[in-house]
Image (cartoon, rainbow, N blue to C red; front, top):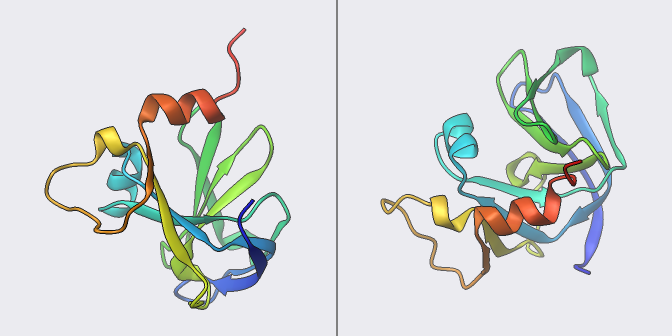
Length: 142
């Protein structure tokens, strides 16, 4: 398991404060079409587990982007707040919302098969295709 530490962050306008018990030091990039449409490029997140709390919850708007996950943003400034797996309440929070730590390491990319050719990260990372990610995270179908 990756090293972790506690984290605090906030949205661009400050209407929402975020406190997490554990922030992974490993940054992941998602290249899926939904993340690129949501933010105009790949989504760079850290795994924050399920122990996440928010101040200013009245300013949070959520969007059910799939059967197993939802995305949230600040309704005041539009900052992307999290991608959350519904089944286990696991939060993936954009790394830019936290104070930058020299310990952060960009180490994995997902939906690598959907990454467009017009950009490329030079970091050596573990890469997963969309099918590999869905097999790992999607709840089993009945």
